[in-house]
Structures are given as structure tokens and as C-alpha cells.
Image 1 (cartoon, rainbow, N blue to C red):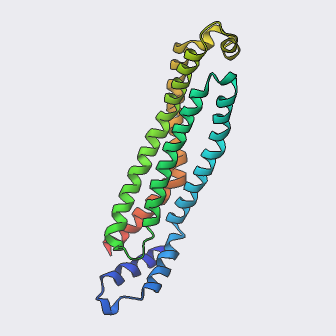
Image 2 (image 1 turned 90 degrees about the horizontal axis):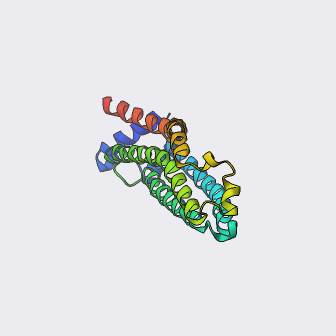
Length: 209
């Protein structure tokens, strides 16, 4: 059904103005198509934004208010990450909205927009994977800076000597980062990758018609 709708739009946009369907009809067809891959990606994107807000807010408040305020720098780190994520979500959401544009030239724009969306998703995979170990080591550095060895709060955080060793965490983060990469790849493919692939398949079929 989605492919037939796209084919109809394609042919209609390539016909002379006198034969072009009314804008309302074209809008209805695009709206019908947008309930497929594009709309699902938009819903997933909104869900991700809500998830980030729900999970980051307690962490920000915890480090801001606990530990006598010594670890407030970690709160600012989380806030910077949240701002970066919401900036990324906004740009991707705006791109998805543009993909529903009725007045754009569908054939030329849709292929370009899908290509841009793939770049966004690839960046999200790499940045999302790197963000975990980088954030952890920055947090670790802040803890060591604000809570030098021997401080009571530091001892509560690291009751076992080797637990606070940078070498231990470096060794642990190597396999953990690899695992995070594959988990992110599965997660991103489920939210966006399979829908982008579906759009690409539709575009390829349209080109062969």
C-alpha cells in the first residue's frame, strides 16, 4: 500500500500541471505514507527524549544535592550531555517532519533526506557508544579530584583498594564498550534502521519502475 501511494505521487509530480492532482489529495497520500516508517521513527524519537529526561533528571539532582555538593560538576556533565542529546533529537525530528512535506519535490528530496537520516543514525551509534566510557572516566576524574584518597566520602564510594584503581576500570571498560556498541546497534536498528531500510527499498523499487 505504501509503495502504491509513493508510485502515485511520483507519477503525479511528473505529469503536466493540468493533470497534477489537487494538493489536498497529495497531502492525504503523504499523510497515509507518513503513518508508516516516518511516523514510527518520530514516535520512537519522542520516546527517547522522554526516556532521557526521566533517567537524567534524578542523576542530575543526586549529584547536585548529595555528597555535600562536592560532585556538582558531574551534574553539569549530565546536563551538557542532555542538552547535546536534545539538540540532536530536535535536528532529527525536524528532518523527519521535512520528509512529510507536501509541497517539496518528493522524488529528489526523499532520497536526499533518507541519506541524511542515515548519517544521523550512524553518528548516533558511534557517539552513543563513546559517550558511556568517556562520561564514566570524566566522572571518575571528578570524584578523584573532589574526593582525594583518605576522605571519608571517598572511602564510602571505594571501600576496596583495587575498586578505585584506574587500571581496573580501564580494563573493564574495554569489553563493556564493545558490548555497548552491539547493544546500541541492535537498539538503533530497531528504532530507526529497519524503517530507513524500508524507505530505501521503496525508493529502489520506484527507480526501477
